[in-house]
Length: 484
Image (cartoon, rainbow, N blue to C red; front, top):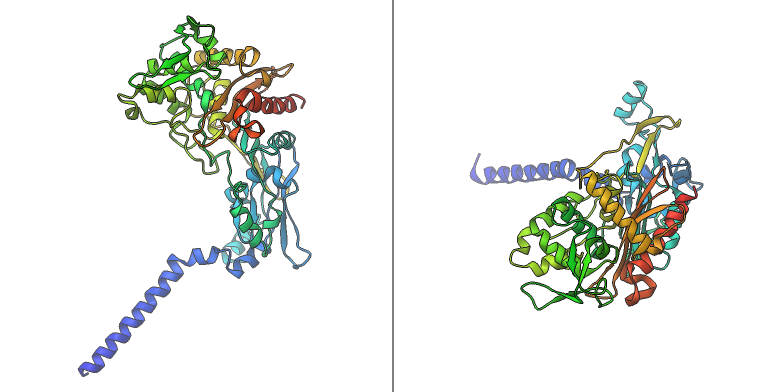
């Protein structure tokens, strides 16, 4: 074979090798991506022809279901009877936009397995049920609706859960959206409009947004002081008009720009009830960076809350960031500066105290059931690491009760319930403060923990406080819960 022919043969061989490599790459490496791409018409056909199981609330009210498509024989349409009220908790299953929420987290269980594939044929021969399974969620639709109504016209989030089990009763992010326009093959304009909306209705503020927690973080600061023997509720502190931050010209003032209790000295318990910034900045510095950060981490700061959805981690700077910077530590002790928390994280703080110091992993699904309604699996409570001792939790509970009975949280009080809580009015650099309330209610047999945040003060704007805006929202949820 002469040289030109050898070179031609080599070129052909190299070309064939490249083609084979490309086909192999497409089939093996990119194949699943192309197969599952919602623009793939085969995917659209397969998804529309498959029935999905129902999702119900804890009492059986339907949150999501599949119905026959009148325009496509053998096809199904997903329906969400509660519309926007449960969209961030339940999610959606869309031909163009994929799955979200419970629809995504439990996609394998919810989808029918009747694909007529070899594996499914074998499974059928072995007696496996290929029909879709269904979910019993932890959501209480009645409480969910109350919480949703309370957030009408404002931006923020509400999480309410059972501290003993971690079961989430209400899960509200607002602004919300109706998933119905996203559910067919012509939904691209609706999806584009939602993505372009400056109010960000697609953003799940329960788990994907962090806010400065403001004075609600004083629970963590006080816990660190009690756990480490730095102070007790009776410990006296100076009561100045303003607290000079060490090593800085900056000062910390109370919300009303006055003393906490008339000047002189004030007990720590009174300072907590009245949410005095001057005392808690001083207390944070006395606790020290290492113990402050360690206590925040025990409550869950620094790591995402374990959950079926992706959760943004709540943050507090590392202890190294406070070296030779006690001013920053004092500001962080009152939930300002670089401290950030998701509403789910602050609900976990309240729930941990209500549960004797142990937070339970939050849950959104109670049971998975088969097509005949028989239980396949039940979600068991999962305790997290202990955040504080039982004794500290008991002391914090009493102090938080006093906040609601005699302090800044009076607007969360409900007749017939013992309500414990902490308000927060978190200053921001860009606008009005965020209004917070975190706490729990006890009717003698049950406990419900809650976190409420209203971004930018809601309708009150610069005049908003946690006590005037967020506490009444918590009260409405507690009232609805107590009447069940």
